[in-house]
Image (tube, rainbow, N blue to C red):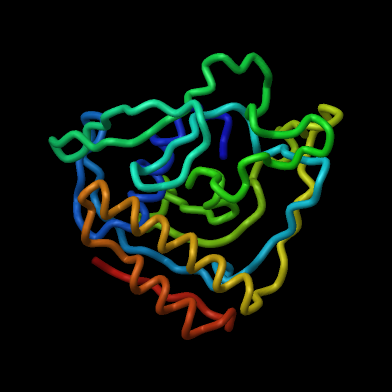
Length: 217
């Protein structure tokens, strides 16, 4: 999660939804139009998440669907999407005066709510790119582009400890699980037409093989 998105709902809708949608949608007074989507075989890759890091866990909103398990401290809010109100539950961490998420241990940087972490955390390290120069979107698994600027939760040193791993059955199945969770979010928001079924089919068929696929709306 980027520190430039303290409200992670904006990142979920304006990046994740924007990359996988087949239809236009309205959010925050802006119409987001679908683009051709390039699925990278890098999407099949896995990654490590060593202890004593937590660099990707700065303080940002923790957002949940109404039927998702969540930690104490969340409150209901309504999000305007396509001229309708969508209910989510959010912890803005407004009482957290530290740099990092309130659920990250200052001893070993492990997450105290990892089994019920919000989508914004769970979806890492999947990247949804909307390039300014390219008229298409792209989805892949990749390291943090500005890892050097992130601060570890233990020791306050700069940089991250995660490493990208080659594709495996485990990494593919975990990526599919994350995509299905994103699909539940899209459905909850009323975004029924997405590339997610095709993306999942691509992962199951290629299993990390070389080559990319471009989907054109």
